[in-house]
Image 1 (cartoon, helix red, strand yellow):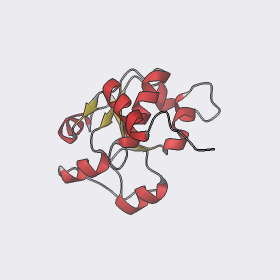
Image 2 (cartoon, helix red, strand yellow):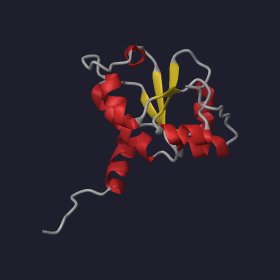
Image 3 (cartoon, helix red, strand yellow):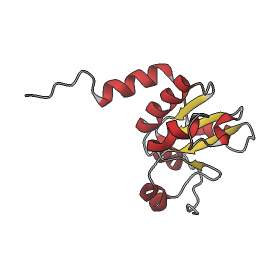
Length: 133
């Protein structure tokens, strides 16, 4: 039996990008030090250890995000119940577009994603610090 895909990853990303607000690194920098926003790093620990993180970002591996957002989950993180803008990012923006769409669907009304991800942040002169356990 041949596997037939109904949607590709590119289709899913395009759908997410059509729904979710993306912000540029410059726009993200304007939100960076505000109390009403939080950067959420979706990358796995090996990526974070290799490249560092945006200062003040919450490390939330993509595979745990839904469980951390949902208040009924035993893994819920109270920070996701706060009234903040959540700026999701990954290396290049693909995972963060998908994650921000899911976060919106779960009720985080101010979920956005960093267009181009961490790579774009660094290329635009954004700071990174070593990840601390």
